[in-house]
Image (cartoon, rainbow, N blue to C red):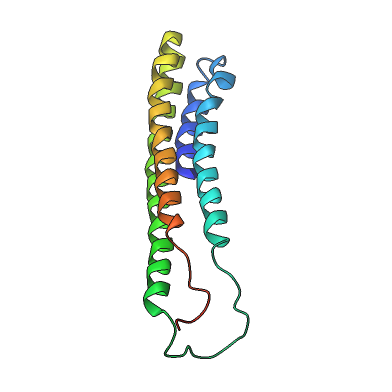
Length: 149
């Protein structure tokens, strides 16, 4: 998200020297980049709520614990966070590049704004797809509560 905001913002400021009218209209590109960051925060809250504090502190786990269940849940949380993070990187950079070209193109020809904005919407959809996949992956991540009997 930060990289996309940097790309879009720097082009927006540079292009607004020639055409000051584009500043308010092209802020939508920055908002699309910020939405990508919000997807990561949503996934972090979902994953943080899956981890609970143990009832008693022990230095080792017994032989009757479901180690495979913990591994499965741990790797599931890791993969869901990784998939959301990587798709957010791709989404943020692609929205930033599209927003940068939108600002420069709009400064040259105002009829290009809507056409390039559609490309930005498709680039922003990458982040939405990533968080959907991450939520589906994290639904399978349930840590065992008690030991197997």
